[in-house]
Image (cartoon, rainbow, N blue to C red):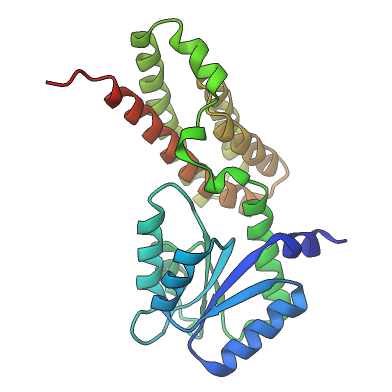
Length: 259
């Protein structure tokens, strides 16, 4: 079984499309590629579907009545709130300059211009889903963000030291994440590799094991010149970092004396 078919066998796709012919074409393409897909005819129906089931990726039409793809994406990201990041790929008949940037700014992960060929769709889904399905922690609970044994050991050294280390980690990681975004935007694989290596070490020390795993994957992708894959992994790293930050903040808040 090829890598693409292995990915397809595991993935669940939600197609959000209001046009009947486009629905038939896209669903047929997905079936031919080996994907299981459900259909939502508009943004509101997509939100309802996501309330019932989890999907690995969403193919989102941008121009739809009632609720368009931009609004639907914003609402999905609001619901996820750092606890999950579902891959959303825009599918739009507009191919004007700036459309890709508009989709990304709305919270989508990538962009396909219609008419979408079978090859384009297959490559896009394989690239993004290979990343998403390799990271089972994408939908894990916030309570599993930190390795219990590591944090227990650090806490045994003293609560004040633990809080100090957490604050140092969050500050350093925030700076490195911002630098990663800049390096990714400029496609500087060497800098991405160096930053990921540094963040991997600090993540390991503080017990952020999933961040450590992601950083190792980013480092490997950057070392191989796979800057697009590294960028996709960085999106997952952003989500995981938000989860780690929240756990630290909640832990400290729970220990504050009640006035």
